[in-house]
Each structure stands twice: as C-alpha cells, then as structure tokens.
Image (tube, rainbow, N blue to C red; front, side, top):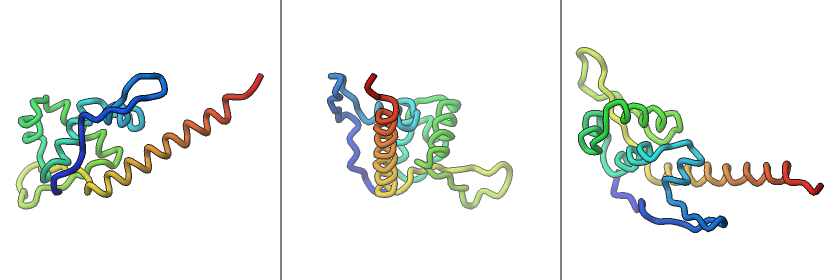
Length: 129
C-alpha cells in the first residue's frame, strides 16, 4: 500500500466541550483500543508484515499484537495472508490493512451507520412526558 494521508493527531470538538480524535471514534464505533489502532496504523503504513515484525517495530508483546490482530480481522479492517513458500511446519501468516480507499470507505460508512443508529435510538427513546 502506498503512503497514506492519515493524521493521528487531529482532534474535533464535541457538543459536550470534550475533544475527540481518531482513536476515540474508532474505539466507540468498533470497540478498538489504542493498541488496536496503533497496530492498524502500522499496517496501513507499509507492506504485509508478520507478528514478529510488528512486535519489534511497535515494542508490544506478542499477546497484545495477536489480540489486536484478531479484533482487526473480526472487524474486517485487516487481511491475513498465508506466507508464500513456507511449506514445512506450521503456516506463517502476514497481515496487512485493507486498501486505503476501501478502508476509508468502510470506516466512513460504519461511522455514518453508527450515527444513524444513535439518532434512531434518540428518536425512539426521547419522548415528551
């Protein structure tokens, strides 16, 4: 994947006066932790990588990396690819983020869906006495 235009530090102001960033939004809509988002961002910035590479680059434990990868796979944000040429023993897998345009489109759609569902809940539950 080519270099992305993703900014990790941009913040928005919420009606409550609190500010929120990408980690906060992805955490709310997908249940992602800061570690999960860190792993996703790392996978967006390069070619497919194995867990050992991610551990080394991000200075995170194998358990943290595996937990994050499993959650990101479940959410459909990353892909797992069987490493070619590894025939003996246990298969080795590489991980990569979905294509940038596809990932951005998915996230925007999911965030809009999340907002629509919240609006529907307000409509349903917030009634005059």
